[in-house]
Each structure stands twice: as C-alpha cells, then as structure tokens.
Image (tube, rainbow, N blue to C red; front, top):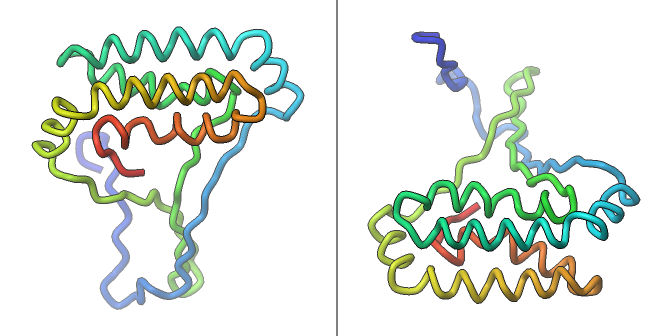
Length: 159
C-alpha cells in the first residue's frame, strides 16, 4: 500500500479466473413498514426537492458532479431504499474473493455531447415522469426504476 491507497487484488497468473465466478446483486435496508412510513411522511416531498435541486445543479457545468450525486440518492430519499451494488464472487482454489464490477462507459466526449444536445431536456422529462409515477403507489416500482436510470438517460452512464 503506497501512500495509504489500497491496491485491487490481482490473482497470480496461474489461477483460473473463470472458475466459480458469480455475479451478486446486493441490497439491504430498513423493513417495509419503516420505508412506507418514511415515504408517506417525508420521502415524497424530500425527493421532489432533491430532483429540483439536482436538475438545477445539472444545468451548470460546475454543478454536474453534485447533480449526479443527488440523482444517485433520490431512491433512498424517497423510500429509504439503498442503492443496489453489483459484486463478483470468484473462487480461486478454495479462496473466495468479492470485488466490485466495473462497467465500461462511453467516452467522456460522447457523454458530454449527448448531455448538451439531448440529456438535459430528456432528463427533465424523465425525472418528472418518474416522480409523478412515484406519487401514485401503483407506479412506485416503475418510478424507482426510472430514477435509478436517470444517469443513463442524461449522460449515457451505464450501471
């Protein structure tokens, strides 16, 4: 560990990296009753404020990182639902290793051009639709799914 930064685990070359690989989606959080009470008393209006603040920050170049940090926590603000994490579990000759899965992204230039031409206005429509769906109990699952995909709609971010 140079400079206090941990280095990612690199298995020795003789280990078979394809042996026993499994992709796991992890998600934990409070129970259904707590999440329901949060949604009815706090989540619906707090998520609306966060969407507005995030979108206003996204309209500035300097505020884009803040905007996407806000967009990433909107499902949590709305229903206390934590973000799903994707990890790869690999067994190397009796040793089990868990590591985050990184998904290849489009180039920054393509993503920036997309945001300037399409993403800023499509993202506003997408977020407004997702928020309205979340206000109707029956549309809540689809609205949360849409909120999870806001980064992809606005900047082609893959997760």
